[in-house]
Image 1: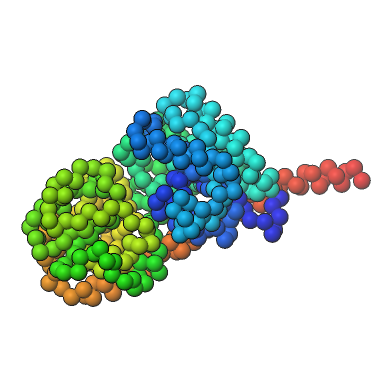
Image 2: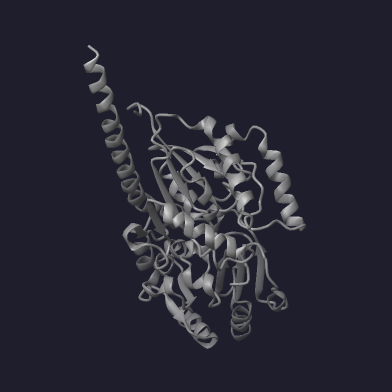
Length: 405
């Protein structure tokens, strides 16, 4: 039985800590005071290729492999310091082979077992479908699957094997949290709960100075995040041409062809910025943008930046997808490029503070701290069930001991 002074252990399988501010990392920051968290960096979701990106990532993995058990800071430094033990696992990144998957499960068990207390009432939390084969091997008392993305539509993922592993993991999980209601439709309703993304409200609502590289003249419309195939380059270029007195700022790593944007004088591609610097931009541009294409991934997504935009206070314009429908009274939803342009014109004609207070008030009710309370309630139920099981196991032992006296 777990000592009353010890924390229950929680092993979390997620992306590389500090690589980007994921919903899982936000939640775990709020669980660290109540649980002994062991964070296992990503074992990947796709077959690696001989590209510069994949080779650099492999080198980083190998370099951090030594001494990983003691590591508590990310590659980005103290700002993203991990409130938990970090493990950089050694596995084979091939998911199409059942044999390799079983080997990976055995490798992971061997690497994680030294950190697991026998009395820990261990809970496994996986934000990745690829952990399906490890379930049941570590003596865990509960399994949580946190589905924050549509992995079956995610670009660059081996969709067939990942879909099979997700179905297997969902079947084994005791509890499933989903970031969007669309994602929840594929899992058993009895154990699935919608857990919308939250926001670091204090970070995004606290006043920040205007960044020096943000244009000071004329209205500015901005976007931050990954500039990938779901980012509607054609829509953005149409808006920039239709509104030449506006400046369109794009912050983030570019992973798709943005040639049409580079050719426009009123578009600024600033590249990535650390997460803690984003509020300064979002607070000082006139409109925050969600210019997404309609594809499977976007139809199932619940973008982190939506509530961050709300907390920052600038008016929001979005293309239409399910996650924004419930906020239609707070933002402008466009069904066409012309609608998008009209929405920006309307924003320009309104005082900034007309919508800022309403947006911030709504965002204040959706903090990560509040989301974490929902998770804590679930995990406490696991702990209660484990304690009951321990008590039942002890009763026969006590009876046997009494019969020998």
